[in-house]
Length: 264
Ligand SMILES: C[S@@+](CC[C@H](N)C(=O)[O-])C[C@H]1O[C@@H](n2cnc3c(N)ncnc32)[C@H](O)[C@@H]1O
Image (cartoon, rainbow, N blue to C red):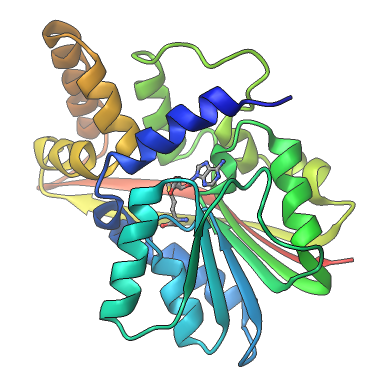
């Protein structure tokens, strides 16, 4: 099933936030994926749905030849700028993970942290991950679990969003091991492990400000609502944040699946 109109809208949504701020809060996950893939110097590495490029920078610093790709053009522009500021030579493309602009078996390694999980056609995205990595090559993914802290956050937002088009996959299904094995188990030998990434904020208000400026889906959602509905959304966020209060801070423990694979 093709979701071209939906993906066009989603690329604008992701482009609307300064995602580099939010990416800083998942640096531990980027590092876990790079460590799990232990690249050799010169490995050809694709970082699919790379956002503002933070995992790509770690892979390049580890000696890989990195290509980053994402469909949000302003995020790709930020990734290019940040790579240049760091003196890293990384090639970035604008493209869709459901139809990647690369050849069969082109890469030794393919990664995607909280990226391919957002493509509406799960089977198409999984097929592309398998197609572009060579036999014996490696896969590294991180995907939020449905019932962990990030999954809970999405449940708050979904009450304010229009329903997704029929047939579009639920992103957090990628945080279910059985679903991942069904999508990728034929093409990859997989190891799947649950991990937690923790984010701390001084208050619910501070967390709202941080996310509403950096996380495109929340920014676009807030801007799409009228004043009273927007106030309800920010209140729902503050109530959610309070459920995570530990003393003087909000501690958001976000469970995810770390998925490592070897192409059969
Ligand atoms: C939560 S961000 C993660 C970015 C980056 N991987 C990281 O870990 O910092 C999700 C990213 O997936 C990208 N994305 C979502 N659907 C995509 C698609 N169909 N094709 C390419 N990129 C996509 C978004 O533009 C966004 O940059």
